[in-house]
Length: 196
Image (cartoon, rainbow, N blue to C red; front, side, top):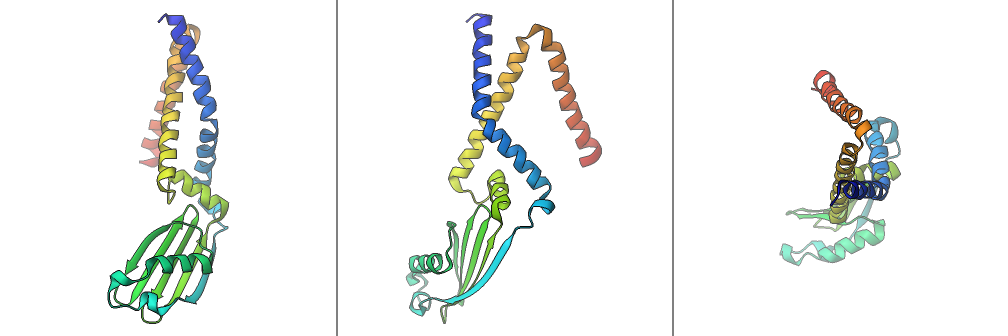
């Protein structure tokens, strides 16, 4: 492949990978700010505590394998309007703990096995809590993890194609590489002087 065709291919890749990942770059840049200034953005956390009662026959059985897990989870979802996936179901001698977690959302129920009575705390962090958790991949499940991996690969490709494209621009190559080195040096100095 000729040098000119290679340059055109790299430019084409850089443009279209950049456009494909534009929303990703915007999302991670914006949520980087909301995470870095959480004290200014996290004032919309809403917590509700409720009580309820489940069928004692579901929870008050000697054999823990016979505890009606599905019925318990579905009853909590229906009665308390829980929307997040189930994350944990713990059983001990006196109590059952059920946790649901999703981006910006958490519900924890503690059920007394003897009576079926339960206390539940539901925390909803609102829109900012959702996007912050998505940024971190917290409670986003497998799909969220794959999204972050694909986003990372796209951003690496954008960076590499941009650097390769610069190497084909004779008049801008030296100044562009100098600016890139200065950016790396600046990041290192900030770390060494103010962060370390």
